[in-house]
Length: 498
Image 1 (tube, one colour):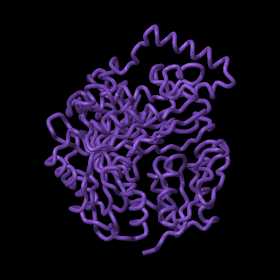
Image 2 (cartoon, helix red, strand yellow):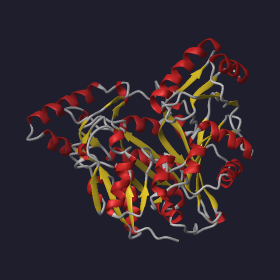
Image 3 (cartoon, helix red, strand yellow):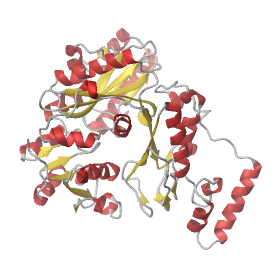
Image 4 (cartoon, helix red, strand yellow):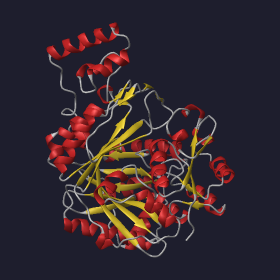
């Protein structure tokens, strides 16, 4: 077992800060990276050492494998943590790191290759006997052949880029006559995003839930699951709300789903943290969707219901250590819900928001966690992901967790930029959400119900008065803070809150 002494974090923002937190607790030194544009963001100086990646496009900074590895060698790091996104699922980077004698805190390049391609992963899953969605994953990409296979599957079908993720290169085709145009669009988008226009076809499940199983494996043959998360509430295939446990998963169904997940990790001799993503149909049947061979954005909800530190476990197994517990010792306690705070305006077609963060609100509520990569005064640009923070709350029950999270959203404001805070509050208080009626088309189905409620004449008058007061006060920021982050008029005069 080789003890890690210094980790270079090949990432940025809140996930870099998250890794630093655990590394410090373990007595491990950390090295952070930043671009010239990011100077002033907290991750730039949070590590024991920091290095600039320069400026330019992502291919020249966070995706520049040779530059990152050369920095790791120069500073004496003995391990690299890729976080999520960027290079976390690039097998070429994992190979480069390990061939250079450093530890890659993640799975083997072979696992990344196998499970990172939707086509090869589906083939392997079928070999292992894990249920997968009926579809076509073959080599023949001719229009006539794909159309024939789509008819065999039965409409609606899903056209999906084999090499991609995040909804890119994906089209839902309701009718046969729409297939050709949808296929052309999916292939064009896949080629632009991933350099590969290969697609696969799947039966489209009309009202699915998105359930994922957190797995963790060591190099001594121990393969464990850390229960499930539900991530059904999504917009354009990007998750908005995640929770654990799922309100739809019974003990019997959980046992079947987790058994299927462990069949996969054992079958591919997996190492480290990963997520088996499943689609749950309305009849209780589940199907393999894909595997994410990395830590997930939503890992905090699992940490809150299990009491485990997933980053610490990643480091332990990367060092060659043995997982310190058996499956039967792991329990879920209570309920945790996470929301993603984005710099966008849901009430204006989700347009991205840029500007300076004047003030980030704090909450004193117990069992609430805020993971953010920003500080007061930081600027928001369009160069990186628009996620500002993740807010996670734990409660004894699902309703208590939702109530606490909704209350925490009253406190945690990002003054100065438009965000989706109010939109998230509307989701959390929607009766259908409270009843657990969540599925992947939730935000589209309840689009009208999730629109903002019109303000009364009294509220509007009060808001106008507050705006005028702000203009006359010593500074707009001081006035906004003086009235408090919960007050409705903060939405005006450049302080529209999340």
